Length: 467
Image (cartoon, rainbow, N blue to C red; front, side):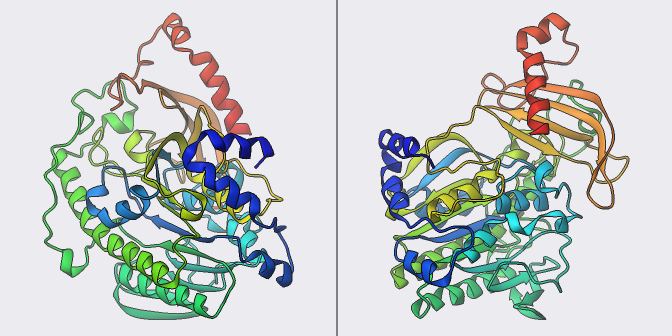
């Protein structure tokens, strides 16, 4: 973060403390000796990332304890996004601060394309942090392979809700019980080690919830959830202006209600786990100087436009809950931040807080500074030939969204192949059409496209995809 950025924080009241703490931290190089790391430990924050799986917005009913901690006493980014609405690419963006076309994990089958040297866990581990991973890591990662740059881990794979198989610090074993609770208990053990280990720590906590099959913990299996009557995009009566796969989608409001109900029930256990972590940090006296980031790895459609999945360039798929708290830096006041925040910003934010300057490229920006993007690239690749939706890329701002679909897909090694031919386009006025009901490019004339600014948006999208 530049000196000017730190000065700019003064006009953002809730960030004033961040400037003081971050600037006071010892700047630790990407690779440092134990003595330097230990010297820095007194000022650098502990770091906790809680990443849920397939959690869309409009789910706060199920997470009141999380909200009380991280929203009422933190910062809520109301425009939280993912740069790829798919699990492994999104997680790789969180770890690396890079777009999927740069980190190389374009689908759920190619986790080994991620350069581990670029990851936040590598920087923190080399910078003297004690690092831990608990829960889901990357899709298709072999559970016999230890996750690089973590000192302690309980890696759940295959990901299951009950009686899961875990790589427990290098040993495969089945652990009885509900996975969210198993993961929570192991996180608490990791935190307890702070009683005797004075190093700052990084904990990446990733429960399966609320991913399908959305199996709730037995105590929440029959919990009543608030009634939901859908939204205008569910299921959307006329989809003639949408791409073929959406025109052919058949899911209904009833389908969306079922998914929503089950997702909310699984999130109740996540909320319990977050509260237990909060209480442990309070007991350890570490609540004040712990940076906490909570987000989903992608959203999910509850029958929007007839679709019940992620992977699409519509708001329920690409927008996620996104919270941050760091009391020692003044980030504890219940602030709403309207900047377009994204998963690619997680790693830069963490490294900024830890005083570590990355030596590998990042597309994201620290949320502790005053940087404000005017648009975000969101991209998604179809895995293998055929099927829908086509590969697409989109430029998203608070007021509009422009999307292009291409004849591209990923091969067996996760590399992009195909002609790249443009096959469909969408444009939505998000101010007047927040549910994306009217594709203004459908049957638009060249004059109408020009009036919408499409040539400039197309050029911008092409430049972002190449950057």
